[in-house]
Image (cartoon, rainbow, N blue to C red; front, side, top):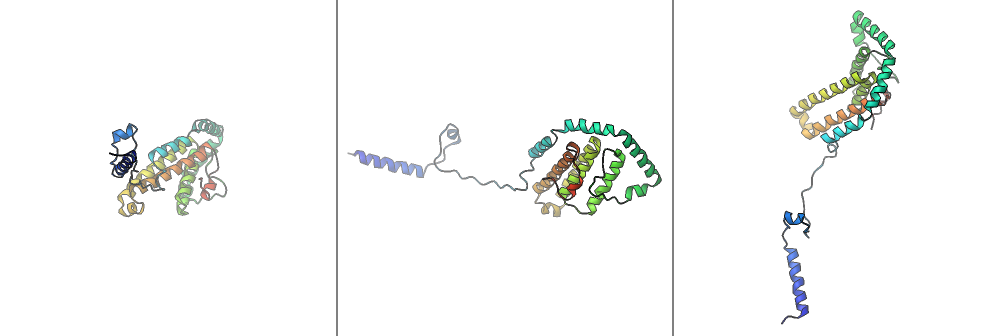
Length: 233
């Protein structure tokens, strides 16, 4: 005949054994609220800190945040451009005359600016486009970092207005598509970037900097030349 103490000891022993050899609770029971006493170990997911901020969703959200004030900026900046139509027409006439008479000098003359931007609303879009091309050559020769270069050039494009600014962004996006393809199929570069994830992260970073530069120049109407030395965070 078992005593109360013996029954309690056997129950404790049985409970201990059941806990030790308990099998995982089926998923249906877990969803119904039953808990599994033993911790379930899962394989850790590796996340590259250089890639995690460059998913398609994050890039799209960054773009939406960057362009949230574009509507107001378009009206403000285009009104400013319209007010400069007399100066822009004079600039257009001057640029066309110089191109017709001395094309090589206009297109290939060195262009260095100190503490000022070579593109402004007082210039015609044609003159600004020529200056943009010259600045692209200069930044390439100076071997600036990708961050400085992308932000600076997109900022300059935005200083002319919406047309050149959007064109600059479109050209930047096209360049990244070409770079993605070239890096992916180049075995050496593919390996250097750590495969497709690294290649995508680099192109996404460049497009993010293009957007930052455009917003800085067009939306916020800030000077671009400081970006040559100190890029936006």
